[in-house]
Image 1 (cartoon, rainbow over the protein chains, first blue to last red):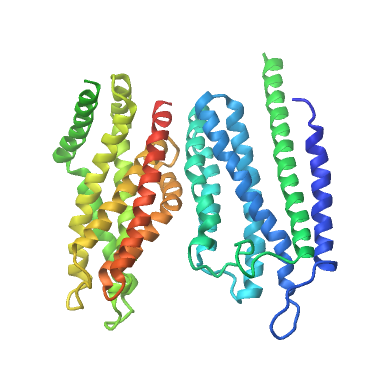
Image 2: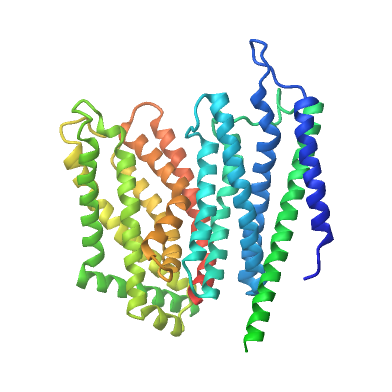
Length: 230
Length: 235
């Protein structure tokens, strides 16, 4: 329950890197160009949208991982960790949705399209929300933890489906790193993207650790209150 | 020895569910009635579509919407009984392996769901498809989809209903958890049903492609549900 200096460093560094990536995206990385010569300004959201989306998938792994660990050991801390991982996932999922919708409006001309990636990601959003609805509707603490862990594991199955579906099916959602001809990015775009992605993952780690510490402190405070009350 | 014991336990639990259903006829009547009511709602939904509208185009979606909500009704019922009458506690006290409970409840739910599906499909055709073009592909293909998708619905549903019966707002909770999890399965089931209903060149391949998807979902999800059941039912 000590301070976690690494989390604070990651928070600062992550903030710095994502901000740097923002400036790099607008002032250094070249914009993609439409056939008629106009610069595709909407493409800049790529440096934010993709990092938060990748972060949402990666953090969600921990929901399933700690869910399994909780079921194996029945230690409360793993349930708390799974819950906080899901909270951070929800945060990233909502950001992904918001930025994605803005981009589809500009690029595809509609706010929403029932397209494989969007559909499966929407399902993922509903599953993450359902995780919290489930938690709120179980009173018994142990039951709540077990059910949430089980549901977290089941829900996680949608994450790889959503991630890979653009590679399996005909999807108009762009796949940048598909391999093969014409995929990948120019060096300056790639560097900008990597800076944004690394920064976002650092932020994800920091959010998770700091939230966990807050939670631990809250629990300690509650325990102390009960002690004094007695 | 152990194997035959499990088999006997499995049969005993399944038999209990069947006998209870045969005596009360509660699940099949409520699910069947629900299916009929859904069809009334469909009549409203299609009221202004006109006679030239080909109902076969939306039929796969309509029947799976009816079946998914119907299945939730049945799943919820099946565990409310267990809980209200303390049967689940007795089952847990008795020396029955937890996986056996899962497979027995799963089999019972699957059976009831299939019975109501098989009964309501002709009713749907009678009400909506008379005087229209018949099915493009052999009718047994629809049977294959019904079975394949119902396995996934009952398997995951058995796990989720076991959890949600202990929550506040049981049936709403089941829907919140169940529908998004079922999305890949339902999407494939509708695809396969559509291929079976419409027919024409290439639809048989499409059908088996969607069925492979259904089978994959069934295998993964039922295995995960089976693995998790032991943890969920004990608390």
